[in-house]
Length: 272
Length: 112
Image 1 (spheres, helix red, strand yellow):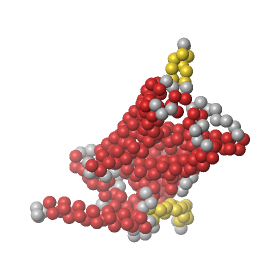
Image 2 (tube, helix red, strand yellow):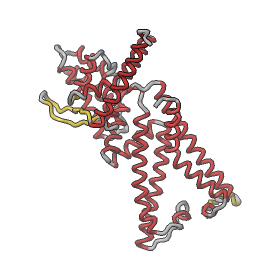
Image 3 (cartoon, one colour):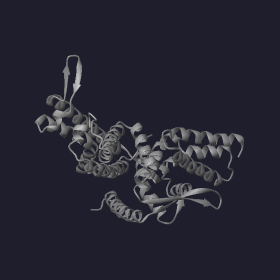
Image 4 (cartoon, each protein chain N blue to C red):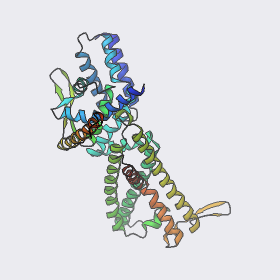
């Protein structure tokens, strides 16, 4: 292979690496290895193997920007959720969050739930082992009602359940949201925008209900020039407090409900 | 792209997954080998790079398995094979495709 041909080949692979920005390094290497082997195999199969033929091989592969992000996401999801690599689970969630609005909303919601489960575990452990009190303003009123042993057992259990739920969710989403490069046409694009809209609308609705109910319950008020936040009223069983918790539940369940609603709607229309 | 070309592109994309699974049902293959087999069966792949995300998706769904192996010709290659789940899925797709093709053929020929 001449210097110019080697440069052409390298330029294509550099473009592929650039298009895979945000994907973990081992996944980028795997994708680049596979595509570079494809180029070498295709060139070896040509009788001449010259520069024109290399250009033809590259042209037949297509611009890396067209297929790299889908390829990167599938490889990350495969390692993260099929082979249970936590690093790739987090990486694929981050990559997905940066790619779509729905991805960002879902990752934020799951992130908060994971944070709550981790906080419950930590608070339960501190309380059980060292008798440390639960003073945190946000989680304190909620966690104080649960015995330390309950937090210690419930926290890790919630982490496991959440991991399985996220795995199921991403599996469903990846299977249904077929990218345009894989034959996804109008129906697939409609499915993606429908599910994204539903998830985001449900999450915002939950958030609005939660804030409005919190204000109505007196959990937040203006005292002089300062905003005072007091979560104690939300631990009582008044109608605004119940509405606030329902709003919180809607916010956290928005990805699941949104996905199930979209699947049900698509089935009614006979699409999937 | 003209209307005819768009229609053909959609036809190709729609049948690509079925053909890919059918090719893998005949044995283990690597990326370029799969593209060659698809090209030989009516030029189903428009841009060859798009075959790799499709293989990735089928792997996520458990239809296909893959492993890197050294090749006799030189560098190692990623070989793909159909899983038991993939064999079942292919049988279902094949049966649906035959029913669909029969219906279209019947309409085209004006049979009732």
